[in-house]
Amino acid sequence: MGNGLLSLDGAPAQQRLDRLGRIFDLPSFAEPLKHEAVKEALLDMGRRGGMLDAHDDLSAGPLALLTDPSLSVNNPDHPRHAAGVAFLAEFLDHDMTFDFGAGRPAFDLNTVYGHGPVDSRQLYDQQDRGKLRVENGGLFEDVPRDADRTAIVGDPRNDRNLITSQLHAAFLFAHNRALDMVRAKRGRVREEFAGLDEARRLLCWHYQWLIVHEFLPLVVGEPVVDDILRHGRRFFRPQRTVMPVEFYGAAYRFRHSLTRPSYPANLAGDAGKPFVGFLYDPAESDWTDPSDLVGCARAPRRFVGWQTFFDFGDGQLRHGKRITTHLSTPLFGVPTTLPQRTLLRHLSWSLPSGQAIARAMRAPLLSAGDLDELAKYGLGFEDRTPLFYYVLKEAELTQDGLRLGPVGGRIVGEVMLGLLQLNCSSYLASQPGWRPTLPSRSGRGEFQMVDLLTFAGVDPASRGPVHNR
Image (cartoon, rainbow, N blue to C red; front, side, top):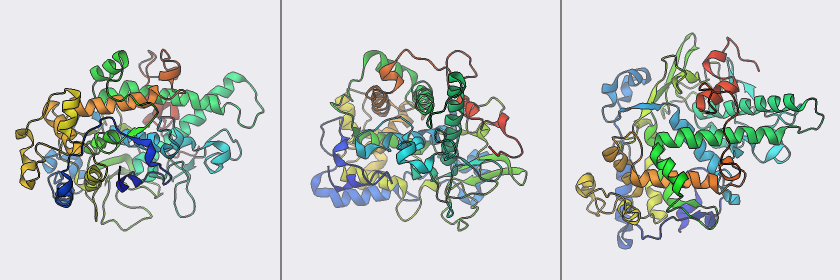
């Protein structure tokens, strides 16, 4: 598959090439004799100020970008997706690839639990080895950190930004609450790790449920999810569990288009005012309490008030962005941007074109006219389009950016559901008729992110003046 497979966006270093598979046996989108020209074109497509850059007016500041749509005319808000969907997508990405080197791509919260209380002792409360460590970041909770602010978590990628880090902390609290529930049902117990496995299974199954019943319907559409569950996977049918390059290197990268340039982390944590910041600001030099929402920092205002990220019914929700070919400008850092890295993998991983996959799927095909902005490179990209760009353009043209289109949606839906079905410990594999048992707002055996955050005790209604727990 080529040396480009050696790095998966900062994933753990022990990853093995033989665990990366393919869904389709198709040739690369790039002609072999034109690799240098293709590389230069991909770098141009993904550069800051290039065709993928939404050209958000960052000079207006993070608050203005949050409230004035005219400053992001190429980057429209999604009318329904909560702003937190982008960070849930990131959390899922890290979770499914955490044990990739061991050949176990799965949704099992290993980013939270690590390798258990013996091999990952540092993640667990040494006074109660069944519970996970969590600390205070000033006003509210934070993941555990050492003296130089490095997060003590199963996967350091979960501390890349404040929101994903706080989502990780919410799962720490959710586990500890689940463990208390399990122990209360059992009665007094003396074993060191009493209830740990049961609490972990309880939390994992609820987490997997919201993937199947909340996240995937939002990003691929409920009809696609229902079709896969009822009639099976048509394309992702591996003999063993693998991570397909078409999914990981391209289609699932759609999640970056959901990202806003700025967010209100909380509504009153900055001396009684909202703490609003760019997701990333390369000009920021204060690593103690930066003005942006980067991770690896701890200060009283650096917590998330989840009412702007998920819908708690209080009117404070902010929305994410539509799935389009224009990505928020803060994602275009230096020297190599996130979109550039994604596109370059298409070359080093020999990914097929979006059109070739559409034909293999017998899906509706985007025409060269739909992609005529790519003709300027003189490399035939309008007929052999890099899969990442094709998936974004397909969503933009066929779904108005509200969800993924036929190619992107099918790849993402089949792989994510497939990883659950191939994991013998998941509810979908071992007990597909199971329904959630933890409290939910609907009260009908459903479970969503607002329910998980409420159960963890980090929802807006649970916030007090100081959160020492």
